[in-house]
Image (cartoon, rainbow, N blue to C red; front, top):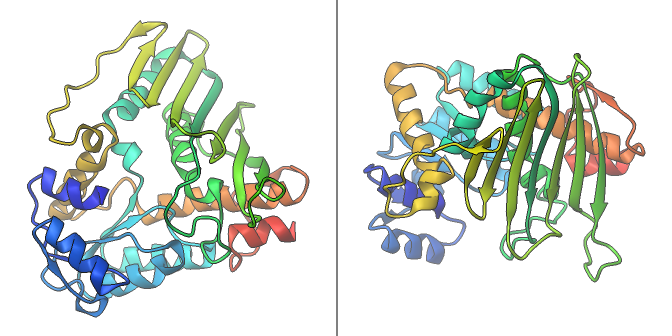
Length: 332
């Protein structure tokens, strides 16, 4: 829904809509003035295909769209296993980098300004990013088939922000990850997927970044980030209301002009425009398949760490590449 609305908000044409049920496809197509088609008919006349199927379908669907001639905007999480991620990275390279890993927050004006401000506060001493909300009421987010829970699905947002901010500050990539996951069994839920995650990223400099992601915090979402350095502090509130501060002083954010403000605020519209520009210039998106794999490697390491009583796991992840995050957690 968000991608379809963003397509119209930026003035692109939504050529066709496909879904697992013909009824759902027809409903969406009617709502957005488009045509309902079968999966087999994609990419059809489209320049870009948005793949927003469940994670277990991401790799196969994205590979088929690339082979069919379409550029692919692939919804997060990238896929379920690192083995699939390797295939996507290779296919994206083969097709000229025509795959964008849909980390919309990387294109959000508030996140881009936070990243730009980070070098002004000196060597980092503290980095924390949180996404706290209730469990979604749609989708099979807690199923084994999905591949992972709160960290795998929601947690890739704060992880991506933490990775981007640390990199902008000159920290490079983390060298190790540890995590503590909390499931829902015993709290009236039948599943044993994770609903709350605390993740710690260790950098070569000694910086420890903390990422917290939860489906046990609703009903109102609270997404925020705080970065401290030797000479200052940057703080961002992403949800429910956006605000940005540098050393306690408010930093102005761009005026939102779109009909649906959150699509601009959360980066959905900028993401589409940037991808169209990348395709026209024949360059790989900043949010590439390789970046999506980088995030998934951290996720895989975190789940393995949680299964080993929060012992550190070295990065890049060197464990099994054919297991889902949930399988890594349970295997330890």
